[in-house]
Length: 361
Ligand code: ADP
Ligand code: MG
Image (cartoon, rainbow, N blue to C red):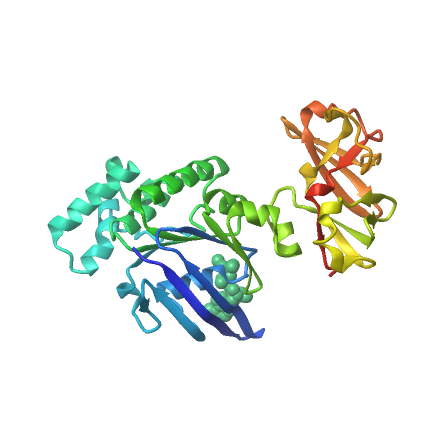
């Protein structure tokens, strides 16, 4: 088993049209032995490049990568003790599933008998025993995904690398495979680096999460910390659905002035935000921290406003309420018990204990 360490890792590409592209800019972090670490960020932020550098499929422009205690900068991919699962499964169409599973081991000149045992083991773990004699074209997307994972398992690597492995599956299957991958990780006790653009997948799978944007690591933290204490507006807006609301404001003492409404900042938060006193800020508050007064035991003395709703969306157990502060749209997420009727004004309580302030962009 192994930890994986990036030290000052930079990867630049020479793009014909764009010129020099910095895909990964000075990444420093350590993935712990047996950890399930997720890289998340929008398309093009450098996730796949990071993973391919661990795999040895891409060589960093500068910096060092360690797997275990071994500096692997010059180590060939097949000698890195890793196995990678790709988004498109990359199965060989002309081979049976059994042959696909054994392919990597045959390349390593593993004895036939050992290969057979490993295939049997992996097939049992993934419940794919009945598929072994079929060809990839005879399998569903979910089954192919399982085979791709099986091909990694038979190699018994120290580190598993997953690049958006669920993105070609439908929503229901994705949730099911998510649970299976979590269980598999516990069972195999291996280090996993998992890449996705889907923040829900990241939050549910990751023991820790690396949030990336434009080649830069924004924050590395456990899911709760990313949600409660985002480092910046990018992380605050990327993690959580619907996303955090951002409203332009000015802080004066404990008063927060927005276009139209004034809020009172709880005293215990003022020291944390003293640098913003008298300044323009961005006021961040999550949809679930804006609730209808109707749902509370009593009406709070402060931070209640009565905006006219623009749209109400019914999601079954919850409602999304849309309204404006100035010309900025704000979303509130409340229990369906709020019984909001039509688009009349509704009293909403902003729980500023949960607010965040950010530098204006
Ligand atoms: P992600 O996986 O997060 O979507 P990538 O790691 O694939 O992002 O890409 C990061 C950046 O590097 C993007 O701007 C992409 O266009 C660029 N890039 C990736 N691979 C190459 C390449 N082989 N040649 C030129 N640019 C590349
Ligand atoms: Mg990618």
